[in-house]
Length: 102
Image (cartoon, rainbow, N blue to C red; front, side, top):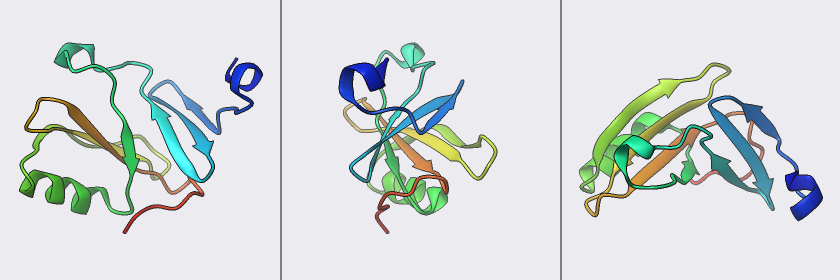
C-alpha cells in the first residue's frame, strides 16, 4: 500500500518492526505500538552503538523504558522516556544502508 500511495516500499518488514529508507534516512514503525505507555507513537533513531546511545540519553535525563532488545540479525532496539514523558526509540540496524550519526 505504501508503494502505491507514496512511491516508497518497505525495505524491512517483520512483526516487531517495519522500516522505510527515505532518502538515506530510516523511518521506522513499531506495528505493536506503545499504547501501554500512553505516549503515542515512537520514532526510532538509527545509532551505531545502542549501548552508547542509551547511556548518553540516560545521562541527559531520560529513563530507560525498555532496555536494549536483540531482535536477531544484529538488530537491537531500546526505548527511553524523556523528561516530558515522550518515548525516544533508538535502533542499531546493520542492514540499513543510510547514514547513521556517530
